Amino acid sequence: MTASAVGARPAGTPDPGSAGSADDPAATQRPLLTTGALAAAAVTGTGLAAVTMLVLLGWIAAPHAGTGLPAVLRTAAALWLVGQHVGFTFRGAGRIGLLPLGLLALPGALLWRAGRFVVRAGQVRRLRHVGYAAICVAVPYAVLTGVLALASRSATESSSVPQAVTYGLLLAFAAAGLGGARALAPWSQLIRLLPQGPRSVVVGVAAALGTLVAAGALLAGLSLIAHLHEAGTLQRDLAPGAIGTVLLLLLQLGYLPNAVIWAIAFSLGPGFAFGAGTVVAPTGSALTQLPALPILAALPPGLHGAMPGWIEPTVLALPYLAGALGGLLLVRAAPALALDAAPLRGLACGALSGVLLGLLAAASGGPLGDGRLSAVGPSAWQTGAVSALEIGIAAAAAAGLANYVALRRAGALPRMSVTAAAWRGADARIPAQPGPAARGPRGSAGEAADRMADGGAGSGHVIYVDPWAGDPPAQRRGPAGPSALP
Image (cartoon, rainbow, N blue to C red):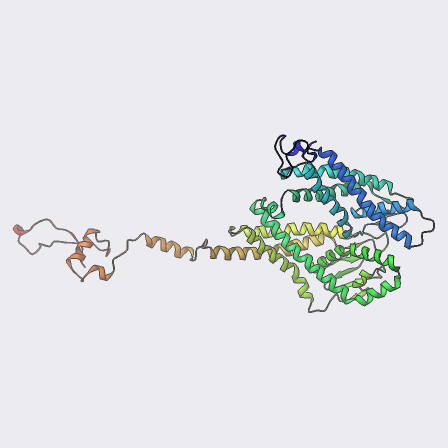
């Protein structure tokens, strides 16, 4: 597949970004498959090199009797797979699925750059063809990820090859596709390409999730600050040394996104677990002994209240505030909606937010072996269902009210009841009567003439008289007829 097959400029058409010369190598069309494969290999090699350097630092700083460089390379490959959110299994201990989401930043950033490179090198000009370029990166990248899963296996540890291929394909397609789309136009232009309805829902979802992420980060940070003394004690007890301290800090930074998602699940109400039969929720928590990791000092073990009673309503109100903000921005992004359209889009905003939060909850947790820590993290279905209800209801109410106010201000809604409007319309069909000043003196000949002209419609009464009734028959000038009397 070449760039011309996916919407590149026809041959002979000068590229505004090039010199326009036929001998210019940058103006030559490159096959997308070749370019995508090279980009995928570059991403894998660069990521493995960075992870291998970190593993070498730990190998040098820690006692490594009985381990050599092959073990270091296998460990680096396993950690690179962890960056794709691929779990691994220790023989005799069970599966390790609680993986730091922060490690996704390294392969995600590299794949983002790869997508931009392929789109520019392949001279892709149409947005709908960016998907082809993303596939050209994702397929070879998934193959390389599967090969690493096979190569990193040892007598004690192994990774799932199908999981490595699937997750590598999804991550590469999403990151490379977003990077390629961004290479064509800014985000403001890309979002305007959506129809008005989907665009408003996307804006509402982004506002609601952004508010929840900020609130979750604040809750996690305040909890860690409140237990900073316990975290420092754990750090001193571990005595990791200089290099070990750096590696331990990087590991905890990798788990920060997990902590933010857990804090969001906490504010929603269901909370999360850290072990079988445990729970951490706004109403209280019940935990057993925790691993000796300083960041876990924010979760003191035992039975206790999660927070002071006066803070609990504020925390539980955060999802509703996020939904209300999403509903307001939804209407702002799509003004002049019908009265029933705005609440429906608010409900759609809540449903989509619930799906995304459920997926994030599933990705943020996982088992730590087959023992008591086999269930760690929030429940995906509970987090998704509760967030869809809370955000959806708040977004629907806020969007409906904001849309109604906007329509009233624009004059698009009537300001009277249906009965009054019907009465006003019926009254408008009755001819207007002249005022007293226009009629002249009461009983004058002009007023009588006017009323005769409109058939007596002015007064609504018609009287038949004979103006010559008192005269002899010979002096009568005409037959009797209608006449309007004052």
